[in-house]
Image (cartoon, rainbow, N blue to C red):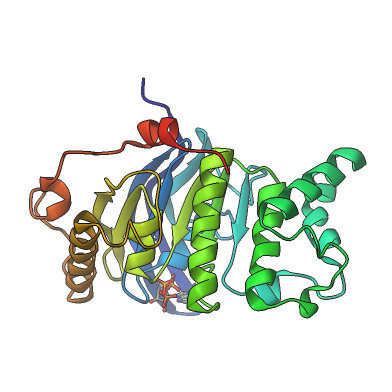
Length: 291
Ligand SMILES: Nc1ncnc2c1ncn2[C@@H]1O[C@H](COP(=O)(O)OP(=O)(O)OP(=O)(O)O)[C@@H](O)[C@H]1O
């Protein structure tokens, strides 16, 4: 049985208009994300990745087309979404403790006090920060602050978690740890994740699918299924020949996108030619392990 899409991006177009100038950032983006999928989005700089995420998050109106969450059109920030941005320093309130930062959206959602406390405790424990409840964000490292931002998103119990370059500002080791944290959270909570990144290796390592965008005005150049085993490991997964094939395929697509290619033949790449060990989102769910 196929699950209905939790998210539908239905022929979305976005034109920025400033005075008498207009920029067509997104021309015609169309894709669906099924419940429980982890989908990564890559594309050249300026392809419209942030624009797309802001439209999905209801932070900006689309020019035409529609974004639907569980079949209902989005016309403002929907309750069922949480967003983690790159600038953790700006997304946390420096005058509030870690605990208060994580709790704030739950207060706004009118979650009762006891339930709030339980959700905050669990989220901070899940990201490995149960020892810093009373610290202030500025007392923590960059990687820890980004964990707080992730805990805040997770405590909110979103149907869909949007992430915009969330690890771009942390060091390589922390980045690898946070990637594994996202895989574990996704696996344990069954949350749907849409993850925007510049990093092709990261997209292939994390995703069950990678959407490669053309350059602006943007369309989906290719929707690449990532048929790697669901249980991922920074060393073993990245050493797989299939990982190298997929990385090369996505890299090639991004290079084409930079040159202005806007459509690729359906049977052109490694991704399409490999069918063994394919892990669908639903079979992946069955294989996932607990934290
Ligand atoms: N507020 C705005 N007003 C006018 N044009 C904008 C605005 N924001 C973005 N753009 C334009 O829209 C296009 C897409 O920008 P966007 O920031 O969404 O791309 P991106 O893929 O996220 O870029 P990057 O990877 O460099 O972060 C670019 O041409 C950009 O100049």
